[in-house]
Amino acid sequence: MKKITYVFFSLLIISGGSIGCITGEKADNNTNENTAKKAETTYIADYSVAKESVLRAIPKQYIDLARTSLHIAYQHTSHGTQVARGIFGLQDFKKGDDVLFGITNKSPEDGKLDFNDLVIKSYAAPGIDGSDLSRNETAFIQSTRDFLNDPKNSEINVIMWSWCNIAGHKVAKNYIPGMDLLISEYGKGGTKIGSGDGQRKNHVTFIFMTGHANVGKNTGKGNPKNQAKLIVDNCMEKQQFCLDYYSIDAHDMADNYWEDVGDDGNSSAYGGNYYLDWQNSHKLGVDWYENKKSPGGEVIFGAHNSQHITANRKAFAMWWILARIAGWNGEK
Image (cartoon, rainbow, N blue to C red; front, side, top):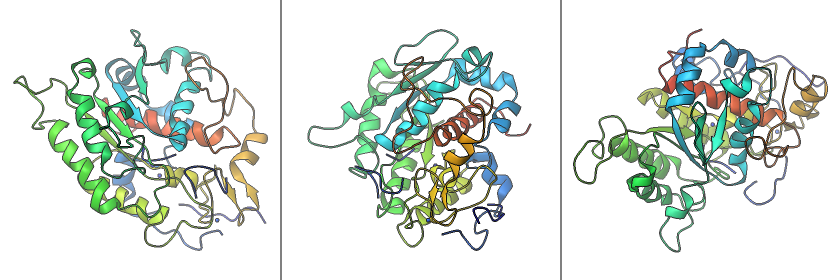
């Protein structure tokens, strides 16, 4: 049987068995699903907000404010394309979305979200791989500093980094302290914010991210579910925003949680691919949309995906965070 009802959230990233940065039984309980849910849905963009219905319920004034006031820099490798390709495609979904979710990539236009994809890597020191959070666990700290200290990036006010494979990485030792350090320097009231020499005018909001699911290897110390909990708990405590990749990967469209899942909706316990099944049983342009490689560009899945739903959902979650940054309180 494919479906048993259970009610049960990640940007640093890259189906069963993806190539490059990579690495599923149904969970028998609702672990973490009902814990401090109000706080979680205020700061954590998990499966519960990664829905079109939630996106459409956000007051338009906050979508408009996010679109016209936020300037985003995003660094990632392959798994991180699921966010970028999702938000690039969203503007072509339904009537009016070309304006409501209008977006550019490294070419700002008035009235559109200023998104800058893959722009921080070049600021890494020579010989240091700063392409995502996984290659060198601390490279993102100085790369981000050097990027933000460059006068040509003075308008940037949102930073997000994605994981390749989060498994085995020292989240508590390197990632969380590194993000906290950057926030203390470049966040609101940070030591690098001001009008003096070596300071920048615009403070920065940093978005945390959890890692993608790995087929049959999500639980246990150092694995995606446990790593996600460390990050989510930290963000809930400190009221920081987080795009919860793991939660979105591990929940189907009916909110059922599948603990053995991979990064493509592929679960042995489910008996196939729940995202692909949902896409095939729903209508393009009505229930889901095609992701794009660039704004108005070619149709393409998020990397490591065989369907569009994963990236659709991560785009919905991203816009939810942007509206929250713009001042929305998270309530309908």
